[in-house]
Length: 113
Length: 113
Image (cartoon, rainbow over all chains, first blue to last red; front, side, top):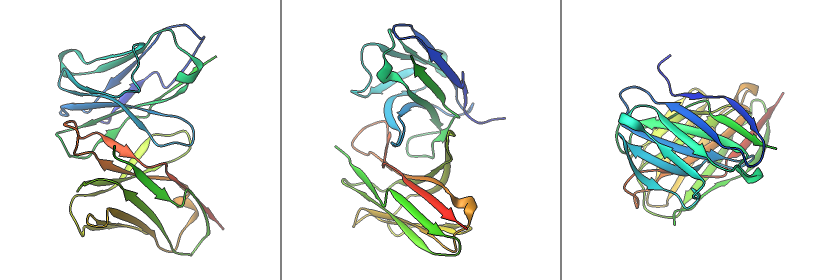
């Protein structure tokens, strides 16, 4: 399977715990995006990488959120001190270059209890 | 700030009927994408529209783009139950360097026998 891969698929955590998600993009894609989707809404942009450089972050990405893409390959999204409002589907997407089609992974569904 | 609006948000239609979903956006863009999302699943790319007047068709779905009117349409011909899903349009935000996508709220389509 050469698509975008995300792990885990589901995560249930207690409020205040830290969680980390992983995304493996399509191998030749330079750009990697993280989006968040809550029930009944469209995905909202969180952050984007070109290779290993994080070039843009949304206002939605509070100080509790951090993302990395070491060596321009896979990416991780960490949420510290989770809150119930963090419950959502976290989607990763990758694209070859600017303006080309973005392919989405299956997502990680986070539930904070 | 780029805004993307879809209508209708909910659409219930009978098999065999035709209907159109509209996507309006607020700033200049010449790249528009349509995605399909099944419940609990990720986004599947349907169409990429890259220029004014672009029209693409796949099966019972046809998408078009009018950049002057800042409008895209997704037309459904002779709907079948398998088309039941949520459909999102997304616009490439040229105001940012990363070309992140701004999504509409989605149109939840239900096709009834």
